[in-house]
Length: 231
Image 1 (cartoon, one colour):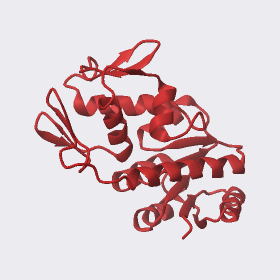
Image 2: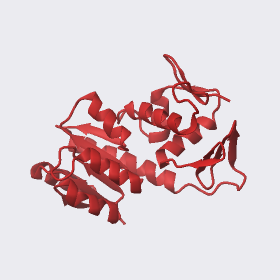
Image 3: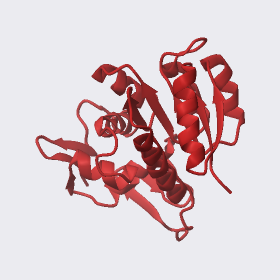
Image 4: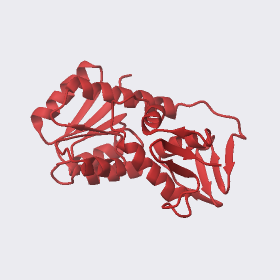
């Protein structure tokens, strides 16, 4: 069965171009042209991936991305004419998985979408681990079977990507990973997306597990080198 994707894009020509390329690659595609129309479809539809423009009528792409991510973990790809770094950071902070600026190559968009889908399917179809597969580090408990995290005896909710990043770092303690390595390991791609999302996700992890995120005791920054999970 082919993957079904949702494209939320107000420029009809671009939306049809995206649809044509995805359908040529075997995808089922639904189109809508506003944020207010796209939100209920995204939340209620069975989609494997969602493509969102930022400058949408009814509800902009930032708010749309935020509301989708509160409910679903499917990959969200931003395709936008907004090229400023602050817009990319904001999109990643709200849960986007990738950011592509217009004008763009439709073939590259399809390739990135396939990479995200492959990675997401692999992560969500992981085999069950032993019942004792837990990591205990100074008040932090990571249950790899139930994919739950407890910080000082309180459960803290993590998105799929946040959990995967935390688990990876915690299972490789005291080792330094640079942003490119983490991006390739967790996002499953090598320079086909924006590694700024790594910085955003590290900050989110610190906010959730550190007593003082500005003075982290678990995830340390090794300046000029990357990040290290300290035990």
